[in-house]
Image 1 (cartoon, rainbow, N blue to C red):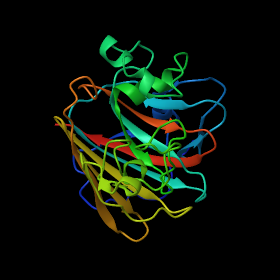
Image 2 (cartoon, one colour):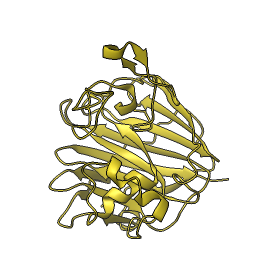
Image 3 (tube, one colour):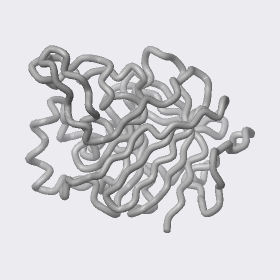
Image 4 (cartoon, one colour):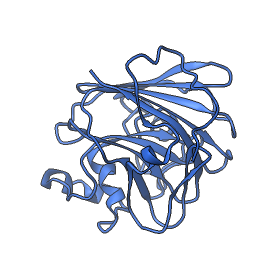
Length: 257
């Protein structure tokens, strides 16, 4: 496959970045599947295309683990109704069993499938969400409301998924704590490329979202991790393949100290 003909457009200098996927078969083959076989990711016209069919899957860069880094990658959605995905960071190799301390958290994930390795990073790492609809989790309770309602900041594009972001609990008249400082980014538009810039330094996580077409760039979140069992360094980087959603990905590159 030939690399995408469109140039990388980034709000900042590309100095020091190196590719993890730049549109070639060689770098595509460095990404491995965790989860059910039979598909989930195509290499097409220099892009990776994730399509959700069957169970949850994860494609992760298997060649290397990373401690501190700045990750840039571009994605586009194809429709506004179903575009659920995410970028996973700082998780152990998903083919390995979870640490004992993390196994105790499995009951908090109602749909956790012990036979599906794609679920382990949900517990062990952190997830930068892609979903402008901020769909609520049908298996989780939101202060007495189940299923969890749509529209919560902690479930929206640019958030560290499920980390409390000051969402209003209207029926009880209070706000959740703002464990992450979240601001919505530019709205996703089908067919338009967007870029994530994800900075991880020690326990500090910062995310920026840019509309490549307009150049509008927004810091969507900052988060200081205080969980000693989760998001340990070094860890892997991956892309979630969510059932029923299709996205395209390109220009995945990283800068390390």
